[in-house]
Image (cartoon, rainbow, N blue to C red; front, side, top):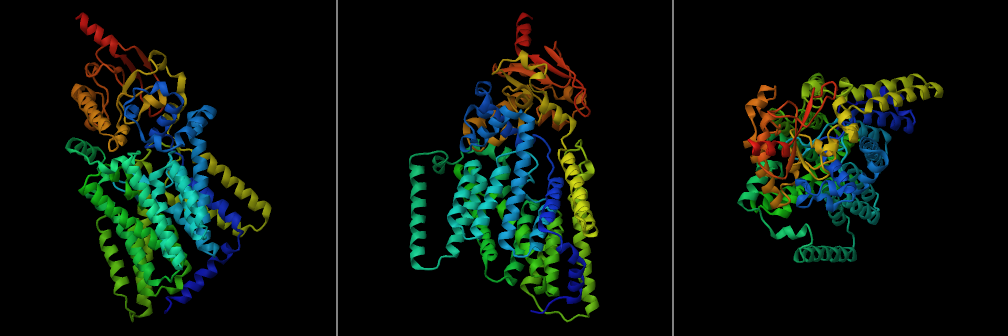
Length: 634
């Protein structure tokens, strides 16, 4: 195949030659610092609240017996992660446990990714590029930009994901049994995250079968697997008993309202765009790549993802099957993204001399759309990439024109990347607006720091100077990795020192009008209702119906106008269930206390003035029993 712009490649290779002379351990140390800078710790947030609550429940089960989230069972029964988390909490306390386990999770992620890249590529430069892409790319999977890999808060995914990556690396190295053991172990931590890894293992095995004996063994294994699933369904072993159940009208209405992202029919353009970008990149890869471990891995992961999406559509959207919805098969996208972005893109680098101008333009269009995938116009770039790949022809143009087109596309890649990073600024994108070290959030900053550090290492060959520079980089990285806002730090550390807990019985439910389940984190008490609990809606009908009933009761008893009068938006007052009226005590005799951020019509049992920047000025505790007794006297 005719190579593209060989003088340009030669000049670039000469430019980066000093970097190739740096020892691999120095590269890895610098890149791990960059990884931590681009994957900061943001505290207990998002799904991290649910796992923290489950861990606290494992320590204090009598405190959460009446909590709605646990009342009808929870997904905690399918993992031992909460048990481990609880043990570490007893040892270190909640905030230190979450932070230290999160650090180990990021270390495991970086280490397993390095091992996988090294299993695929012989050249360290491709390994470094894969790690750089892991630092640079903020890739979501699923709908509504809810989930990413290597998240900045602690969940079971923080440990299951690295194990899946390790299992895939062992599979690439043809350690089939070891790979299966590691993937099965990952499934005991987070089954839904490990399931696509196990499926890739199964499909990959079919692609490397050689003789008839291996095929017979594979067929026997398949029959045993199918028979096992049938027996689990017949004997209704959780969760397989749900394979014969479908959502009825009421349950489906609640599930499709509060967890619509589980049904691909409700996905929007920004949810499908990453899928189309990946397909464009894979199409180009298959046009150029020869058979080998990476090609088989790409083929297996793509087959698994497409099958998962088809099963999701048929089983969830059409048949409304409870088991299929609960399995969340679309999560296969997380490992598919990893393979396409962090393995396939470095492959293009290691095989860059195979790219003629047309293929280079196709790749550039795909990469631009990768950074701009949430803009509708990215569909034009995705389509252009596909057309250039499928209808590839050698174009006879003046070399200056070809260079101009290539240069324009490179500028487009840089511009799209910088634009995405501009949106990563907390004050622009709205994510963690009160966090520390605001300017470190854009991932381009991590790349800049890496580039500066590597430049100094190239200019300073003396080991003492290199050691000093590396020490400074490591210290600054560790000092800036924890970027929790002050209010988050305060709420995680206050613990038993808060002024409310001693008034509240260990199993008395609290309605704290906030998106976050503060009754768990601050008070170590059951929450009557919080938004995060909606995660349990798809799994249990009784929970789903009671969840929506409690929401409606709280909403109808609330005084939205009074809430808005204290500076809250209508969405905060209604959606986040800001407690705004003592009449909410009338809705359910299981509701024992209200916590509000402004005074209600009645005497507060206790007040709390945190004096924390960006936190509430005063917090009020109301006991429903006092309100109800006063109401009877009147």
